[in-house]
Image (cartoon, rainbow, N blue to C red; front, side, top):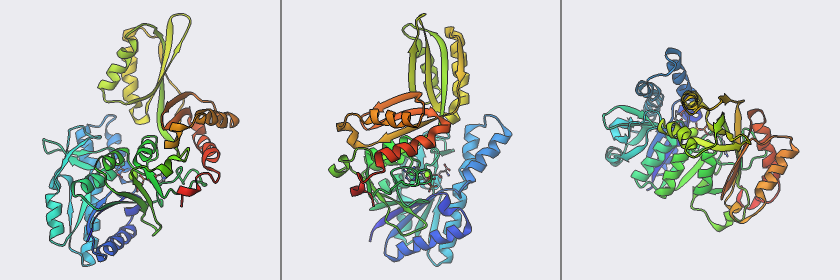
Length: 411
Ligand code: ADP
Ligand code: ASP
Ligand code: MG
């Protein structure tokens, strides 16, 4: 008998019909003799709906109350699934984060998990029950509800799998696995049979939301066997695990698009030591992650400093930057057209020169202007005008992954 953690995303539990189908799948696994812990997301669209309600009442809704609100979506789907499983004759118990104690810090909206107590789930399983757990939520030291960040039901699932030493963590979603690019944007994208934790982390961090970034980090740290598959079909999914040599033979394993990016420029900053720290210190203190930064030196001893932040942090970042710009005598602050970040990812880039050059040529052939560039050992990212994000992604996929060069590890 195996202990399996299954996680069903928003689309998978998006209607009563879908919840019935999920229950069937859970029962199937139970009939095969597995002990089951099932983590659920809110029904599709529900979390966004709740965020919008808060926005209608306040421009800057109180973070604690926002978490009380947006965590309710998962409570509803957990109860609905438990009700259905009971109706099918399978003893089931649902749990919210405070009942298990998925303990987090108090960073509302992006809380980090400190510990997971798995005793209650264990007891339920020992009693022959199916445990259904509300994803995305935690509880802070004061006993207040927190949420773990968008898409973080994946993290709940992996954290439980790690705490319970589960044999397998299955992530059920609306695509058949991890593809070489988002299959909803790139029709020629191919499903990967396997992907290494490292590559998956890069892809998740660069916009491939099929798995949430921190869930992959945690899976790697605790060596949780992870598979991504569809809740709509029985197709083999994608295994995420330790990298092996065969994967390194491939130059590029995926192309990603992050459309949640905004660009800010502080113009006419005096070019002297300490000013970058004055600008980026307060932004970091506010917990805002700055992604790419470029500095254009100019002849008159002043520079322009341009950087990107997540689009949903733009307002807060601009407030801070405008204040700092005044203090340091900068000439102005611009917030430019929406931008997108397009990246190519692959362990194979470590040992191959010229990948970036090919990428730039492909974009140039499409007449797409590159606004910013960042590279690491296993990825190259460019920022382009948001209008061209999808075009850039398709062109790059075609160039690097369109041929037969990766057939060995796709299915
Ligand atoms: P869930 O609600 O099940 O968590 P998500 O919407 O968070 O589902 O993630 C699944 C989506 O991720 C897919 O519908 C797809 O559009 C997107 N996606 C982005 N990049 C990839 C990729 N490389 N492979 C598969 N899906 C991807
Ligand atoms: N419901 C949450 C969200 O929409 C968490 C998740 O779906 O994983 O972000
Ligand atoms: Mg998701």
